[in-house]
Length: 395
Image (cartoon, rainbow, N blue to C red):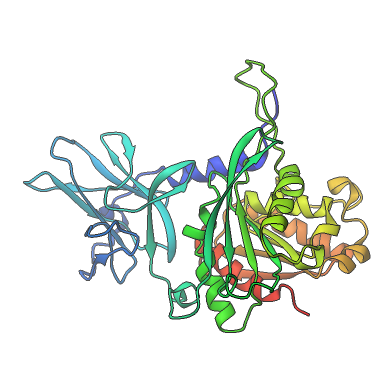
């Protein structure tokens, strides 16, 4: 039986933690709730619930006359809702961190999506999500600026023997300026998410459009593919055998050639960057160190190549000694960017800290960003992308 990669185990622990636990407002001692709730921006059209107030509390409501217990499952806690005489259950959460969060309702022990919310792919399934207004939301706000296009691209992968898809952002003016060629950023999602994450939860197209309009970033193409790419089964029936990931091979041998052939790219390493969050950071850091000639920049958001964290990383043995020659890496990489949230849970602080210590020891240049007041979540990664992109493709 193949060993399960540790980042899968870590992701599962985080997800279980986020969806477990029990808590009540009475236990918290916080009973003063501001009655200025408004429907969340992530609601389905015309739906009044869920709602968010000025304290960043979430109020959920659902009609379930036959239910005996209903809870709001959000932010690692379960909040009991109260039923009225019409069978409608309503209740509030404690204040939440700003940004986007997955959540669900629990009805008599069954976890279900909230019918009032739009659905997002995260935690390994389509489910509810809610946006808590952020003080710095302006950088991903929908503004009156030229907007690019996010297109769905379907292709057959011979390496996986499956149809796959990626989403490609082309900047404003791409279709009009038919002689202009563009640099490319390959941008990866995290564990139990997919190729829809960055353009939906992450708002990558709005972040890029605003930066380009403000002349803080060069126009570029962004490719968002699915990080789950496995070697085809050899026909065995061992249900315990874990699929072998070949995502690196798919990126290098299929995705990049396809994008260079189909879009007007500047098809060389100097004009190609790669970045990812969590699992995607781990994947992209390994990809770039095995293919330094194909990229000039890397962004690792809430992740590094080392899982689990270690007190000391030996550059002579780590990833087959690929970080041993710091001078060569500095010559090849124009940008090595690391980011994290100030509230990241273990093992991320230790993992990132050990990796930075190794980089310092080898004299490898890098830049960092810490997202204030956020954990392992989309607001951290939105801010990370916003800080990373202006560093790319400078003359």
